[in-house]
Image (cartoon, rainbow, N blue to C red; front, side, top):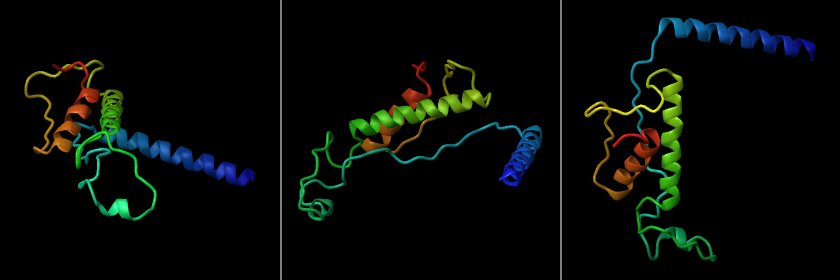
Length: 130
């Protein structure tokens, strides 16, 4: 038991030293996040396959077919908040950062679930942006 604890401590120290070496050699300059939408309603409404796999009734979705749900929007905002905290802690952005025109790009195609995902994510990531 004592040997296992010593090996774990030595392993942790070696990992920390490697991590410090890595940080000294490299500097994070950009981040590209590729993400899918969060929770969305099923792609089809009546008669969908998921409705036939059980005799029980499924819950009623809060959004039309294939659109981001309300809960999906909340989760996407939380994901944006998580990434904001991460880039601030990494020193990539100052706290309460407010971008200038053209500094930050959120791209989504024209489907409701994708541009709404980008809208919610950006609200969490840059809450002070206009």
